[in-house]
Image (cartoon, rainbow, N blue to C red; front, side, top):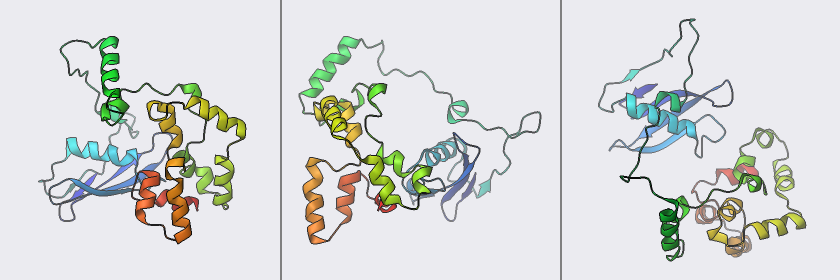
Length: 236
């Protein structure tokens, strides 16, 4: 890891979690030492990735922004002179944390969920306390983000055709999704399936944009939840 105080940039190499590969990461700081933007050489690096988070955590615990420019280029080695690769969990073991003085019961959690539900789902805790999506239903529809950043899509010469073929849903699958996502915002699977897809709530905005032949950044932000339309550029 290297920190350049003049340019206010942290540079480092992060080992990929599933392959023997290093990604180059850069984190740029603004004047009050908060992250302004970042980049990584992994497929998701121009959007968001956990390699940036890993370098940010490492810098937070090992680097002071008031220090002079310095660098740590020699990785740790074991007694056999082999380079050691550590995960974030190994570097910073999690500590048991409890905000309450005692363990909260399931009934108390259920009572809180019922109370939060009265606000119409507009509270952050509603999502945080929502039950996990059953593993058997997670693959009911293709994960759009995972598809766009997959090596198969990245290396395909006919990206548009490949994308449309992969996300196509049969009538049977559509009915199955309809049944499994009943309740919409109260259903965790609904939130997973609708991500990066054109739904009834935003389809009108897409049609209007097509008629005007104008596609403002606000439209991409509405569809993806992010201001960068990189994923759509890859697809189309």
